[in-house]
Amino acid sequence: MITWLYYHFNELCLKGMTLVFETGQQKRKEIPLILIPLVMISTWITHLFGGSAGREGVAVQIGATLSHYFTKYFHFPKNGKVLLITGMAAGFAGLFQTPLTALFFAMEVIVIGKIEYEALLPGFIASFIASYTSHFLGLEKFSVNIQQYANVNDMKHIMLMILLGIIFGIVGRLFSTALSVSKTFLKDKIKNSYKRIGYVSIILVIGLMIFKGRYSGLGTNLIELSFHQNVTVYDWFLKLIFTVITLAIGFQGGEVTPLFSIGSTLGFILAYLFHLPIELCAALGYAGVFASATNTLFAPIMIGLEVFGGSNMFAFIIVCIFAYLINGNKSIYTAQSNEMK
Image 1 (cartoon, rainbow, N blue to C red):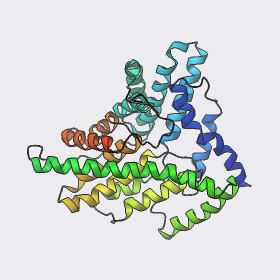
Image 2 (image 1 turned 30 degrees about the vertical axis):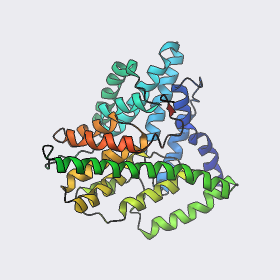
Image 3 (image 1 turned 180 degrees about the vertical axis):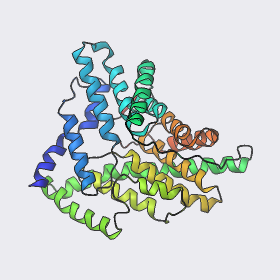
């Protein structure tokens, strides 16, 4: 009975981000207001039962839906897209308290190759208000003061940054491709949606229990461990697998925080491989995998600034550029349209 109810809730939730993107692309006119309680409830259920997923998808969808109805209520049809992006930025910023990242993420994620600069000022204002509001209400921001620095005057280190960007780009692309292929595969192999989410959930729970919940939830535990030098070689890969399975079978949740954990744990391992500073490499992975999987460039660079400080901005720029380029326009957001076509 629980699975049946959850599945029907989830059917609309799964379309939530697609509804937001298609409304932003002006392919549809309506985002159902009921989306707000549905995505909240279904995401709570995912986390209650230990699913490996984030929560930023909910924040973005809530912000977009509220701003969409604000547009309709106050009759601002010409500014609908701008306010939708503003709402997305506010939702992201309120959750992560990274207003510049949220602003650029919302402006560049809807359409590949096009940044909606019309939303710059309202998005900027909304992002900072949302960020400071959530901070005032007691939500803690994750940040690390990186004391290690990349030697940008050494060509060897620059080449290593490029190599890191390529590796993070490949892993980000692996995540987005695996998620898309897994959804299609499971849908084809298990036609009955109730059986699909029921049967695979049992396997998922057993797997998560074997590892004692290490890969359950957002992945913030792995992020913390990455900066305290307590990560295993396979952490990044198992987090990727469990997150893909969780989302592919139909559980609701975000991908971004798990991407942060995948990137930071992978960066930790690569630091040893390439004899680089551990905290710096983990931070670069945090941003680089995010850049590749979401097919965005400026937002990941901004998150390097807002979460890890500006002392290694040159390294973040190099890594994010190559991670972005290597992904080949593959994205976790299947509704993301391509302006370059």
